[in-house]
Amino acid sequence: MPTYTCTAAAGLLDREQKAAIARAVTLAHSEITGAPTHFAQVIFREVAAGDHFVGGVPLAHDHVFLYGRIRAGRSAVDRKALIRQLTADVAAAAGVDRFAVWVYLSELPAAAMVEFGHILPEAGDEAAWTEALPTDDRARLQAIRDHLLD
Image (cartoon, rainbow, N blue to C red; front, side, top):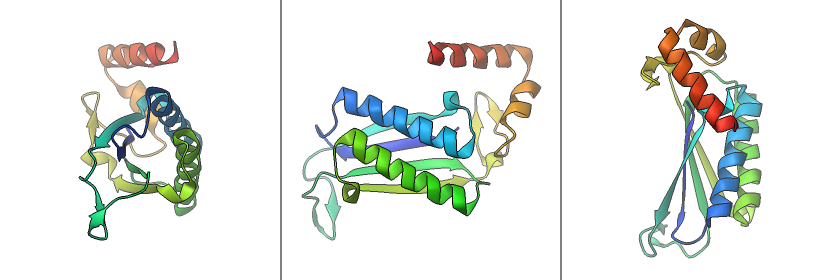
């Protein structure tokens, strides 16, 4: 359900740092929003040297940009808590200063999103949504959850 894209300069993040960032983002999102961890996804994008500009000049510092697309319906307090937690956790996992972590959240109406072949539930309605899925789809979702928890 939430999709986070982490963008950084090519070579800035190694495999272990990416895994740590993915875990941190997943846990922060789940703990603050209450959404199940097995729905979160984190995608990494690398930017080649000279392909990222800030203020019209090439970015000269090691920055990590996190773009989150989440379902609408969270309180302003929760959104701010999520942004603060993501900033701190990504900085720690990436080994960069918090100054170098930029976080952007975009909220989409649940009715404008399809995952697992179904329009998504409103925030907080995940359990009822899962129970209402056809038996085969619920079993497939359970298999994904079980695989991720292994």
